[in-house]
Length: 303
Length: 177
Image 1 (spheres, each protein chain N blue to C red):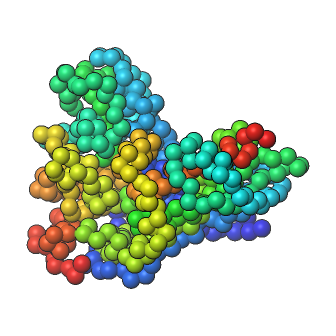
Image 2: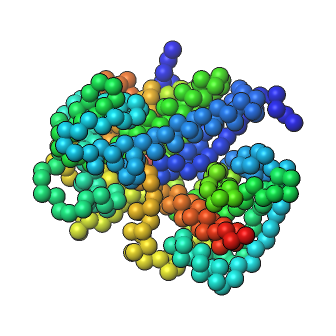
Image 3: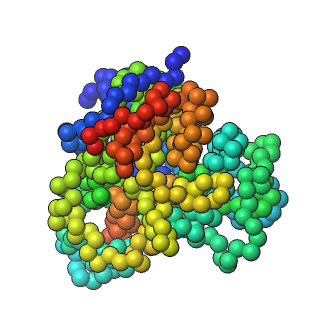
């Protein structure tokens, strides 16, 4: 047995609608497997509590609760909703987690609504955060944490690896990734026009990267093509044609910022600065790559 | 401490195919059932009745009649079953293992091999075969069942389907024993 030898251990499991790849080094096999197990437990908790597909999740419980009923949620759900409120405020309402009903109508989320809605849709102002991990909705709101919870899950998983005394590691949930230990990881992006083609756009040593692109999630709604990206200002679904990658210190902010940039590039570019984040934009139609905030002009690339 | 360190370059096509082996089937078996002292390989030829039962229970199509699985044994007693299966997505080829305890409960799912395909491979017959017999209703069915946060990639949906099929197979073969 090589149980005392320090090796790299890598595992992958299906969670959050994608494959979560966890890698750890600097531990013996037994400790590495135990740390990875705890990392997956974190991801499983996020899936259980924050899935907009699962009626038993905190989001399902909030949806079924009556108006102004106080609902005790998992501390992590509370944290993610708080962060979403912050991003909503900073983006002037563009990033919005109260658009679950729009996604339901578009066929991106399972149907929870029994009859046709008669009351007006709730907004972020209807989501109240009270002390002690209690959330209260002033109107019925279908929350969707799709724009931020996956990144949060990656951050918690990385924390579990660090607490397990790993020297280096990486958690990658279908392109939302975070790494530590100063070991270079190639930043690989899909060509938004032909997603079978993989492009290398650089390397990350420490930090997080998240990508939003529409290539796997397109759907026809009436006569328009849409992706599960909703502009919170007018609650309309957009067709995301480009690929947007944000590099930031945490995966949650990287994940959330890709959505802001996808909806409004200029508004998003202002926010990048505030989060000390960078972005790589691949435009499928124009065949250009743009880096934000550094360059204003797109670099033509041979994709 | 610096929290973000990176370098960016002009995006360029990566030529090498991407394939990762995460675990061997043996590692997955031991991980699912650490109390087992042996794993007995079994090759199953499913009867038409069993196939129909599995398809009805899992709401999926059976592509194969032959299955390979391992019984986890501790002191001669069955403590679980491990099934190794493959799925094909739009850009990925995935081998995974599922561990099921004697009560029919999933104890774990592990990806064993993950391979990215590049263009040509997706034209392969087996990949196309997965769409035979699928209709719009199947797709709606899938969306209802997949419990995720953002959209699911096709291959991840296929793993979910596959796990459901393997559970149905377990019930068809072992439940009455």
